[in-house]
Image (cartoon, rainbow, N blue to C red; front, side, top):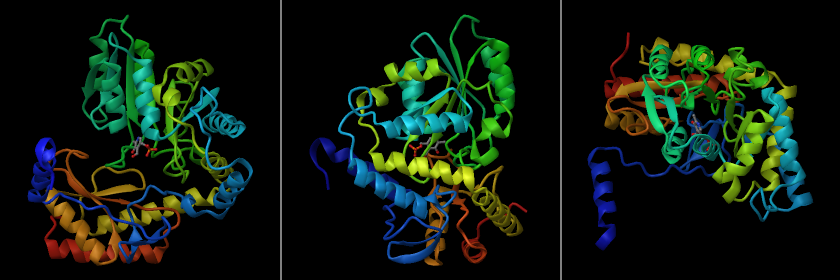
Amino acid sequence: MSTGPLAFVDLALDELRRQGVFRPLRVIDGEQAARASVDGRTVVNLSSNNYLGLTTHPVLRERALEAVRRFGVGTGSVRPIAGTMALHMELERRLAAFKRTEAAVVFQSGFTANAGTVASLLGRDDVIVSDELNHASIIDGARLSRATIKVFPHGDAAAARAIVAALPRTQKTLLITDGVFSMDGDLGALPALCDVADEFGCLMMVDDAHASGVFGQQGRGTVDHFGMHGRVHVQVGTLSKAIGALGGYVAGSRSLIEFLHHKARPFLFSTSHPPSVTATCLAALDVLESDSGLIERLWDNTRFFKAGLAALGLDTGRSESPITPVIVGDAALAMKLSDRLFELGVFAQGIGFPTVPQGKARVRTIVTATHTREDLGFALGAFATAVEELGVARAS
Ligand SMILES: Cc1ncc(COP(=O)(O)O)c(C=O)c1O
């Protein structure tokens, strides 16, 4: 119980409990895997972003261990002082080749890649035109930049165009969208936004955190998926999801990357990745580029699971990716559904406001390449039982 100046935190927590949305952290006892031990119970895990199962891949483990033996466990410095190792440079060359750009720069996380990049590219006199469901790291970067923020309705490129058309042509403008939206699993309006950017000379940026390793040739992301190479000035990706380790990166022109080396505050002021993380990411790229079966299995599982949820008549929104929400509306009901699924042996997190809009609470599911058909069938059975018991409304 906090007293004095911190008493407000207890009041806030009480309010969350009253609304039925207070969530203790779930704890994984062993590996982050398709079947995992969570809070002491073995469950089918539909909550991770471990799309390709690389968190436990033997090649990645081995390369991480080898890097620890050869280079130690840390870098001891930020990148621009003494924290740049040859491994970092090699990873950035590989990421640039992967994204088919001139250069790339790695950040500590996808969050810092987005926030640091948006905040350094834009300033007080500029405008950011942003999809309403863009990730929090984009929103925070936009706020830090002090630019004017204009939000367009989700996926509505015509509305984005109307906003841009009303701006003075001389004003520096960034158009920005997620490639895949993390809570809905649908794709951003990238081709139409690129048309707007070309027409008005805007900077075009996409956050492909959930698309890298999932969409496009060998997982190159939505820019590749939509054939938009050369039309997106700033491509952000993460190393924390399909790649299985940790980090974020920006891929683009060499000048853009050199600019970020000098201006992006997380790059300038926070210590670089340990060699093991960097070596793991390099190994992940080797695996991605040599084993197309992983991405095929991810998509086979995605189709199978989506068809199963559809057969149950659940509202899965507009998902086009391995992220499939089961939208129930009320936040307390979403948490109850998640808890009941957990009792039945399925880990699928309940998500409410402010992560998703009020009245759009959901249980979010993410399948991976490493789920078996048995895992997914079991999970669908648990959904059937839980939605029946809780009286969750069906879409059809
Ligand atoms: C769309 C999107 N962008 C960026 C991030 C941040 O990536 P990271 O977890 O690597 O910081 C996330 C992660 O939750 C995300 O969903």
